[in-house]
Amino acid sequence: MRYKLTHSASLPMAGEQGLVHHAHCPITLSVQWINGMSYWLVKTEPSECSIDDFARAPDTPIRWDGVRNFQARNFLMQMSEGDLVLIYHSSCRQIGIAGIARVVASAYPDPSQFEPASPYFDARSSSDKPRWQAVDLIFERRFAQVLSLEQIKTLAGLEGLPLVQRGSRLSVMPVTPEQWQILLEQAG
Image (cartoon, rainbow, N blue to C red):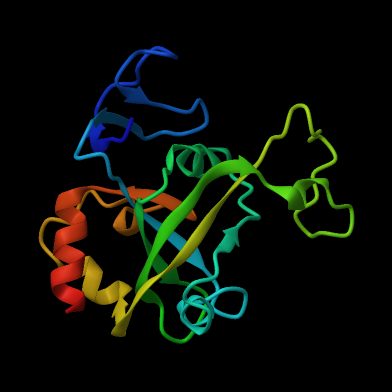
């Protein structure tokens, strides 16, 4: 099941149908099915994984792992094969959306949580009860230039995008079809 995400003012009861909610999240999202595809934005530091890494091996999936926030993990778990993902570069000189990837493998246990030498190791995870998920992404397109955060903040229709909301620091977030279209039109 894929969803269109819209903000809801009230917090639902856990498990209420048609709502996505996590106990540690002040934002509740109501959902509607849309054409079998969802849109997402993921943040990355280009020194760790950039749109250029995807472009260098366009047919090779890259595992999107190391997410250690429960709400971001829950969004990863909602990703399905074929969903499109904006790659957002952060903590760098050119902060903004650099291109698009596509989900080629939906959520599965993040192997790095089990590797003691990994910076993403989690001693509380076990193979029978993993806490963290990963997805595989593949290159779709690089933008001619990075769509900067400053530009994004000025675009009408993006007020509800978690990226531009004060205090939002999620590394994985949903993008509505309307927001996606606005961003693509601006990116050219």
